[in-house]
Image 1 (spheres, rainbow, N blue to C red):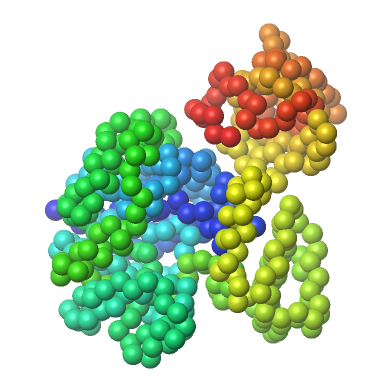
Image 2 (cartoon, rainbow, N blue to C red):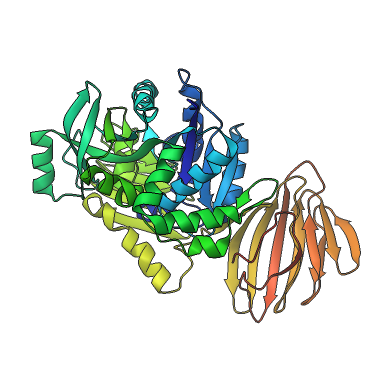
Length: 481
């Protein structure tokens, strides 16, 4: 059997506890929270350090909404995925891994899968590599391996793994998976020993995982098999059959396979991992892994402090001044500000849930929205008008489209635009403008080698993003608004 290690990067999380920075359309794995690289890029580059193993190019599983973000960020760090598999809907980690295992067996000779969430931090890469080498030996023997974080505090925000029999100095047989404990129970776990934090990192041979899903979760196995059988490959992505995929039950790797297998005494083991790990699951976790000043403040962006201690202060758009405060989380973005006590940081996701329930857009989009061709940012809006700033990448093109309810005025502020309006095509340079009437087919392109910047003024009875009829599109987009 193959001894090749195939990294499988799961990039489907929404990171709602890091609102307002992390949002559904641009979640935390695509942000640079701890250094100059995003969490996704750091996860991909982490595979470079596995020099003692034969490692294939990573396989990425992501939400269809995020496919261009994944592709752009891989390109930006000069890396390429073996494939990017698109999930039409979120169905948790067990279906995602099943999809990866099926795809891997079609492309390779039964590799060992290293399953990693895209949004984790690991400081000690050498310790991580040593743990993987240990796990690889176990996975090669058809065991399913998870990596348990050696706890340093009695944390109530993580699930735990209880282990009993020691197979050797570095590997333990799993006794049980334990839900997030209360503080008293977490204190006891830390005091008693024999418990590790559940990292969500796994290693298993592809064929073994498919055997286990067929045995323990046949509904997931059948639905994902049908979705993968109906896949379509375009130049950059692999699309699954949407109807079959959305019919799949949602479940995690732990609940679907690991827990029932451990109860039966199956071959599932845990390798302790002490490598400076964090899932950055909430704002207090980001404070813990961030550089802090002498007063214990973790500062990101344009921030000034005076008599402030042990705060996380995050500025994205403007100056934040913190005076006489302690143990707070303050996060400023162009369209939302969060102020929370550090002890309540786990509850931030309830705000995102409330925004969604109330039909507001701030749970999903930032003011600056990323598109495969560039970005658009809402600058101002009022009764029957809206002003946006568009940036179009060199050589990129918006779709050929029309709107039923709005007209658009375009003003070029930087670069050169090629405009299609009805049956005519013409160029606009800086300080030139044009008008697109309601119902007129139109397209905006950047034929130059520099970024194109446009001010767009929309006017009409309805200005929603779903008022777009696409006739041609370079990015094979469906209606995603």
